[in-house]
Length: 290
Ligand code: CAA
Image 1 (cartoon, rainbow, N blue to C red):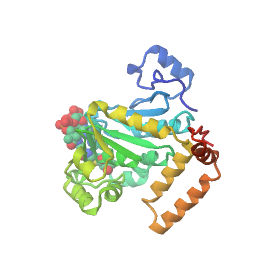
Image 2 (image 1 turned 60 degrees about the vertical axis):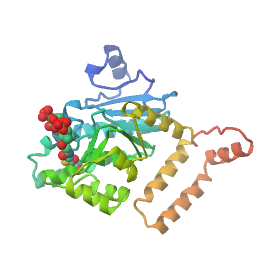
Image 3 (image 1 turned 90 degrees about the vertical axis):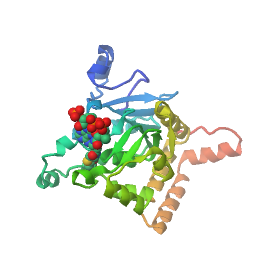
Image 4 (image 1 turned 180 degrees about the vertical axis):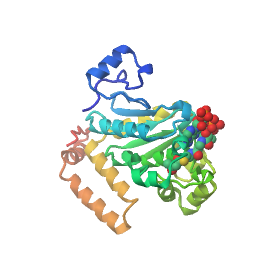
């Protein structure tokens, strides 16, 4: 079931929520979230915004929070009015990593037995484009969560890092793999082995992020980007996203083959026909996401 309403449709902790909107939320049977805020933004309310909201721990990630992120992502995915999703944190921290206090006394048996971190990758299962808007610290699991998104925009004071080595472990949610694919082996190796952070400007120069913005404008820029993508066919956007993401997993020949098949597949859609017809008729396309 999708969310209803627009800017007032904020799903948050009861302390942030008026009794009226709490009642509305309960009536709509949408779940209550404790560690995140969820709303719809943009001129047409077509961009979902998920804000990590655990300020006392600098948005340190733990199972309950990640379950909420997965759940909110899924709801926004199923909401036909939503074209793109933005994931953000606070100005001080996108997320300072997995919760070290929760991990402190874990043993191998606990980690192996519960397949610890396995279900933290719900973001990667989403077909709609997901944009990370990173202000402040994106460390360890925070950096990994940002890298699970399709596009990363950074605030000027953002800091990225994989500092797990400093606390005697290694990245466990994709840091050694996605970071290496994003910035290359030498730089990823240096970051993972020293635990040192890089600035937003370095992350930009190294290709980890798409662009850098003033911190107070970052989320709006991410929403605008979501709206720009939202002008296109949602169906074809998802097909395109899938093809680009395959490049991270397949050999060049396999990837080119996959791309060609998806390209051919667009010819089975109404939106491909409409897009080309609109071009020929010199008018704007009227996509139906079909
Ligand atoms: N886990 C649990 N709590 C954390 C946390 C984390 N990852 N990061 C910050 N916090 C907590 C602090 O313990 C502190 O809580 P208290 O007030 O109760 O002591 C609060 O958030 C504020 O933090 P600081 O006082 O440390 O704030 P600071 O501005 O001085 O420093 C920081 C900020 C540099 C980010 C520092 O907090 C820090 O180094 N955090 C840990 C970063 C880290 O090592 N992340 C990797 C975790 S492991 C991982 O993520 C594994 C994986 O691959 C999934």
